[in-house]
Picture 1 (cartoon, rainbow, N blue to C red):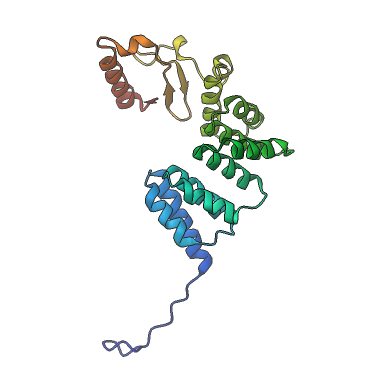
Picture 2: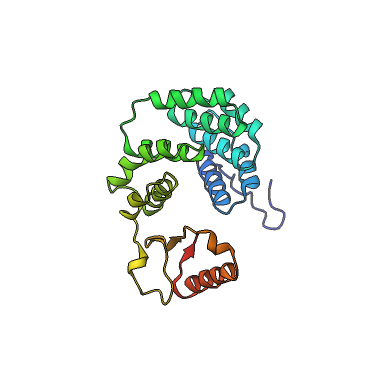
Length: 232
């Protein structure tokens, strides 16, 4: 229609579907990173196109995080194929639902695959860490991490898995043990990842008695304020 004020007919707006798709995916990723899972779910649902493996599996995981387990199950059962990522999603969903037989079946299918790609093996390992299979997680993650190609976040997650498996020494070989370093004022950290400025404390029972908890809080505030280090 002609604009009555300018007496000019505007050019038709061309909608690029690929551009909108990428924008919506980026928005969904941003919402997930901020912990706004419910709105991320709405964003993925609006995208639709569940035949797309990435969209499908990202929405499945968003449903799991949002505790919409039946929706996650319905989606993966309806649209899931025989891909590695679909098997990973299936395994996590069945584990979350407590369906032991279906979980074991999906896990068995995943283990039967001959995976040679380091990055793909890492993703499988990370999924095993989500279903309380730490030893399998470590086994699948280590090739990619030890190849030197992994980003700091992935390297750090691998170290967490090692610690959960009882392989603290293996983690120490990849993290810096600050008990031998004295440049954090009067404080020491059990494990530290310098790339992420993130420390891990393996707290013993004494941390929960007397004023130890308050001291830990003061310590964490100090390390964050003066060194930018977050403690978990």
